[in-house]
View (cartoon, protein in one colour):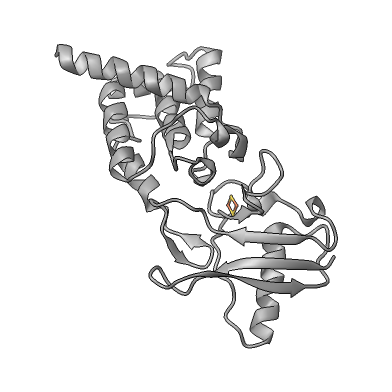
Length: 250
Ligand code: FES
């Protein structure tokens, strides 16, 4: 395959960036998108040019690092697929691809395609843990949890925190991410003691980080590589209202 790539190049957080065109030949349809980017970087290094900086870690769709807008879509055109799991056979020979970092105020670009997503870490730190006396290892069946609750918790836990929901949302809202993290623990008995405090602390941190509000556009669900449902946002809203009322009553 022969491709024309337009890649966002930006030297540093404060430098101005621009789209730079590259021609790349000899791309195999079986390459992953990141392997294609590796091939571009090898070509740039051979020519003595600076390789394109991009984030990646597991390359297995688990870690959420490989954040790229591809032709205006977070993680590219395949539904439920991270950039690292996207293959070049999804594109036509001769295609022109526009590759950019996430675009959101709370995710400032650090260099080229790398953006700073530490805002998500701070939201998690505000309430993504449970305080429990662990004691000895409990028997696996000592705390029965209904199958439907297990399933909903596991569906929420599938969120890899990549930020595609933010990048896809016109409001740069992180409500899908936030709701998955809140909903994950809210389904389980272990998450109940701090349920009210957790939801309020995490929502407050979300707002402090500068993420926008949800206006039910649902673009986040369409872009999510793990198919997280906006139903978790409804659950988040219910939990937030209930916890606010209980705080007032107290
Ligand atoms: S590199 Fe880990 S999800 Fe893509």
